[in-house]
Amino acid sequence: MISASELTKRYPEGREALRDVSFEITAGEMVFLTGHSGAGKSTLFKLLAAIERPTSGHVLINGQNLAALRRNAVPYLRRKLGLIFQDRKLLFDRTVLDNVLLPLAIVGHPVREARRRALAALAKVGLPDRENTLPIALSGGEQQRLAIARAVVNRPAILLADEPTANLDADSAAEILAIFRAFQQVGVTVCVATHDLPVLSGPPPRVLRLHKGEMRDLSAAAAGTP
Image 1: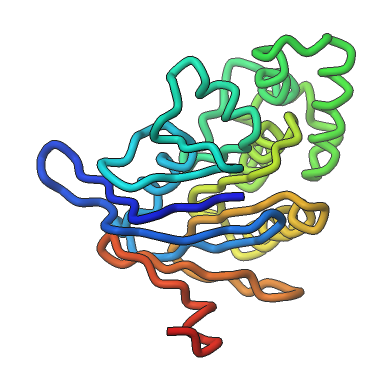
Image 2: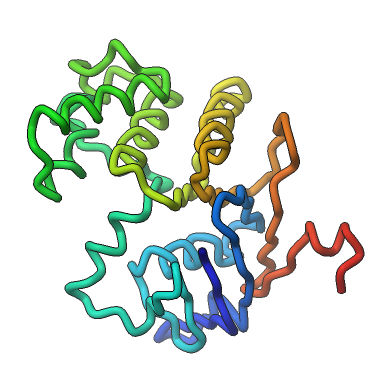
């Protein structure tokens, strides 16, 4: 599903955000990407979403090399991805429903079907009666649920969430992670970047740790793999 090989990202000022990072994530896995602030988590997610290009190495999604992807092909790649950003990127002058409808409108979904899918996505994240509300009237946890609904309304195969529980209380964070677990259980590949590992019910997720741009698979280390 996702494969990275000797991935390096160096910025013009000389800062090396990632160095020789290699890993594989199989379809339907739930993976946590951990590390200190500045470790390279957000940079890696930008490479996975083709927002940025690597300096060297490559990333494959379903066998497609993102480094060789033409710019006009990037929107088609992102239809397979659900992206949840740290700052959520909600449109505060539009209703909850309009925020979720936006990805479907961009790809030209029929209006009636788009509305049905958007309402279904809101129900899945626990916002079934808030479609006419403006995002500013939602709590932080509800805004994060809205961002998730917008990310999954296109039914992506891969969900990338960058610090989705930051600034949330413990109960709200647990609810958000339970939503991710539910998507993973129906076959969605879920990658979550976070400073701290949360406590989850069910099987433990795989953990990849970044430290100063270098990666270690903590799950493999725990299992005794070199």
